[in-house]
Length: 105
Image (cartoon, rainbow, N blue to C red; front, side, top):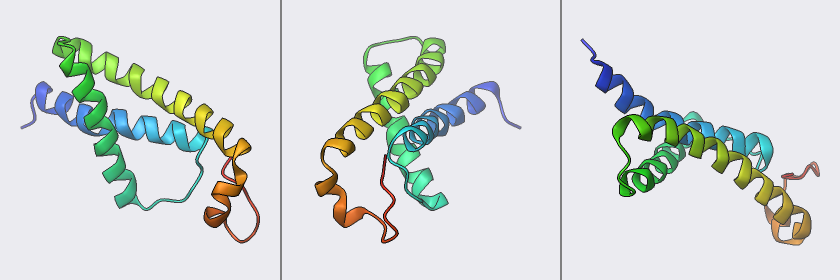
């Protein structure tokens, strides 16, 4: 049977990174990804978020709430920065743009 701490740990492992990436994709860098890519990037982003929050010595209950708040902030902030950068440097993105002429922002 699963305990409450197992569920909390699983949520901390996947959810903050997935949330940050989905907001970032919605807000900025819109590209198709496979489920494996979403999972791998979610693990990486969640690991960084949780690692930084744990480094600051937050109690475990605060890490859960703070990781979701950080994920939302990273998603929106990263998306806004990407959109700003992509509009000013479209020449750098030309090799990545699809053939039908859509842009990343």
